[in-house]
Length: 568
Image (cartoon, rainbow, N blue to C red; front, side, top):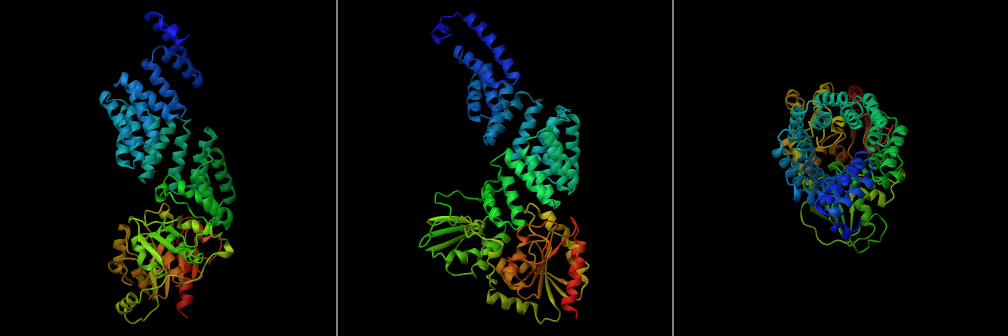
C-alpha cells in the first residue's frame, strides 16, 4: 500500500492493519527471523511513524544484530514517545554500553530502577557497566541486589563470579560460577569464567576441562580457545597451544589478545621472524591499547629512511622492558637521524642518560616537540629484523654515576664477605606477578649462608615487612633508593645479584654485572626455553622451576652454586 493510499485509509482501519502487521513482525522476531521482522516493523512505521512498539522493537532487533548506531536512533525515537517504559530504558542502556558511553548507560539504568526498584535486570546490567569502569566493589553490590530480587538469576551469578575473580576472591568466584551453571547448565560463558577462575588458582587441568565444556556449548567461542591456549602454554604443551590460538584467530580475525599470545609463544620458542611481526598486534589489546598514543606522523618499522629526520621512541610496557630494549637506540643512531627523542618514565631517565648524551630524554606526560616518525620501543626488534643470532648484546650499555658509586662505597664500608644483592618480587601491576615473585620467607635457607646480603628492592609487600626485620643478615636500603641510578650504584657494589624476573635483573644484565635470575616454570618470552644462559644478557645465568610454582628446587640449586662460587 503506497503512502498516498495509506493516508486515505480511515483511522480505525489503519489501527487494525498495524495490529495485524505487528503480530506478524513479532512472530518473525520471536523466531529469530530478524530481516523479516524488520521489514514488517518498517511497514508499520510507514503507516504510523510514532508507533512506539515498532520503534522500540526495531531498536531491539538492531541491538541483537549488533547494529548499535541504528539501534540507538530507534530507542531514542521510542523514548521520546514513552520516556518511562522500563524495558526500552534497559535496552537503551545496553546499546549505550556497547558504544562505550558508560555514563549515559548508567543514567538509563538508574532511571529504570527509579521506576521499577525491583527490576533485577537493571541492577545486573548496571553491574556490568561498573565492571567495565573497573568499579568492581560497586559492581558486586549490584549483582548481589539482582540476585536478592531474583534468586534463580543465572546470568547475575555468572557476572558476580567474574567480578569476584577480578577481585582475586577465587573461592567465592568458583562457588558463584558453579551455582550459575547449576541454574543454567548450557551457559557457555559461565564455564568460560569458571575456567578463568580455576586457571588463576593454577588448577590448570581443571581449567582446561571448563574451557573445553564452554567450546562444546559454543564451538566458535574465540575467547575460550584463547584462554585454553594460555593454559596449554603454561603446561608446556606448546604445539597444542598454537593450535588453540589459531582456532581463536580463525573465529575472530582481528583478535589482538590471541594474536599477541601467539606472538609471545613464537618468541619464547625462538621463532623471532613470525614472533616480532605478530607482536605488533599488542597495540590493539583492550587492556593495553591506552599505552599506545595515536600520532598523525607515520609509525617507523624500518621501512623508511630516517637520515636527518626526528624520530620519537616511547617506552610502552614495564620498566624492565625499557631497560632491555633501550639498547636499540644505539642501532637507531647508526641510521643518522637528526634527533632521537626518547619518551620515558621519570624514574629511568637518570640511568638511561648514561647511555648517550646525544639522545633527548623527555619524561612521560610532558609535552612533545615536533618529530617526523615515531616507534614504540618494542617495535624496534622488528624494525631491525632481529633474529636469535643477531640479538644486539654489546654489554654494558648502562653505566653508573661516579658520585653515586662513591656514595655507596663509603656507605657500605670495607668488604669482609661476598656481597650478594637480592630481589625476590616485582610490581603487582604485572599481570602474571603471582607466578614470577616469591615471598621473602621462601629465601630463608639462602639467607643462612655466610655472606653479606643486601636488599635491592625499594617497595616491600605487607607479607614481607615482618619477615624482613627478622633477617639480620639482610641489609636494607629502601630509603636511599630514589630512582634507578641509585639502584645501579648500589648494585655495582655487589659481587653477585640474585633476582626474580624483575627490572633489577634487567638492570644488572645491562650493566654487565653477574646476575642469577630465578624463573617460573614457563617464563616470560625473553628468557626462551631449556637454557641456562641468555643471548640478551651474556653475564646472566638462569635458574628455572622444574615444576609449576615450585621455588624450592630453584633455591636449593642456588645454594649449591653459591657454595661452589664463594666457598672453595
